Amino acid sequence: HGVVFFEHNLLTKVPHCVIECVATPKEIDDQVPLYFRKALQELESEWSTHKKIIEIKKEKGGIRKQIPKNFPYFNVDFNTAYGYAHVIEDVEEYKKSFAHEIVGSLLEIKKSKILYPERYSKEEL
Image (cartoon, rainbow, N blue to C red; front, side):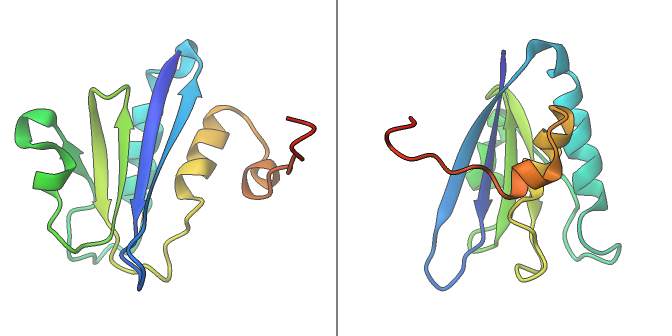
């Protein structure tokens, strides 16, 4: 299995960073970076101030060294080897379900299941 980590740091009034991890089937490992790259290229306006995709590499200091401090961003990391980041220019327009929808598409899960997952009680877990 592969692993995809994604992080949203939206720098709202209460600073809050969320990192999520999704295990992916081995047969789609090669497709995951391609899907995220295409989605990031299409994200936000054509006239963005920042680069659409920042390739995150450990040799360059990782996310902390490659994204300017105090900027909202999205980061995706593939099997902890490398990843992509994107500076979010309009936090209000950014969909927090962005990464979920991409992974759901890869796993062929209906969008409604991604956006509105079933809730389980403690007894059911």
